[in-house]
Length: 369
Image 1 (tube, rainbow, N blue to C red):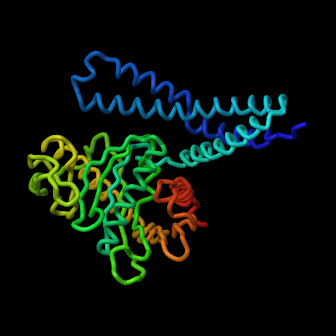
Image 2: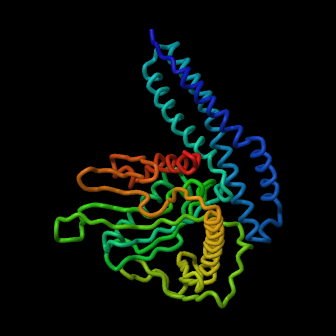
C-alpha cells in the first residue's frame, strides 16, 4: 500500500495562495477586465491610436494577471485529485507526476508571492532595459551581449513579448549597448532589481596571454510610461542626430537614414532608436524613453535630497551588484543579497528567478535590520 500523503504541503500552498489572492483582489481585477473589454470593443476605439494601444495593452496585462491566478487555483484542485487517484490505484507513475507538479507549484506560488511585494508606483508597468558595456575592451562588449541574451532568454522562458529597440554593435566582439522593451505585467518591478553594474571575471578568449580578465557592464531599467506629462523638454535642450541603422560589422540594415539619436544637453542623457520603420517613429519612441528617464532622474534627485536633509544613510544598490566568475570556481553571486548559483551556464541561459526573488525580498526588508 502506498504511503503518499503531501496534504500538509498542499495545505501550506493553499494558505499562501489565499494571501496572494487577497492582495491581488481578483474581484477588482475581473471588474477592470470587464471595463477595459467594453472600451476595447468600442467601434471608434482606433480613431485615437495612442489611447487604443493603451487600452488594449492594459486589457492584455489584466487578463494575463488573472490567468496566472486562476491557473494556479485550478492546478491546486487538479493536484489533490491526482494525489487521491495515485493512492487509490497505487500508481507509482501518478505519484511521480504529482510530486513533480507539487514542486512546480511551489515555485510558481513562490514567484506570485514575491510579486505581491511589488507595490511601487510604477512596479506594475512594462519595462525598458538598456545594457551598456563598461571597462574591459572586447571582453566588456562581449559580456554586454551575454547579458542581453540572458535577459531575452529569461523573457522567453516566461513567454513575455520582447521588442529590441536599439542595438549598437562593437567594432570587435559583442555590443556597445542595447535597449529592449519587455511588455508584461510587473516587468519593471520585477527587473528593477537587476539595475546596476555587473562584473565578469574569466580567462579572456580575446587575449594571447592566459590571464584573468575583469570586465563590466551596466544595466538600466525604467518603466514604460503611459504618458510623461510631468516632463516638459524644450526643443533647445535637445540635439537630434539622424543616421543609418547598422548591424554587426557595420553592415547596412536600412537604406535610409531612419535611425535617431537624441541628446538631452543639460543632463547628457543620450537615447538612440533604430528598429522602427520610419524616422518619425524612431524619434517618437526615443522621446518617450527620454521623458521617462528625465522624470525618474528628477524623482531620484528629490529622494536623495530628502535623505540628505534627514541625515539617514541606507544601503545602496551601488556598483558591482553581481559578479559572474567563469574561471576556477564557477559561480554567480549577488553582492547585495548573498544569493549565489554554482552553475553560471544556467544563469546566462535565463535562469534568473532566484536572483530576482532574492533582490525583491532584500529591497523590501525592514530598514532597521
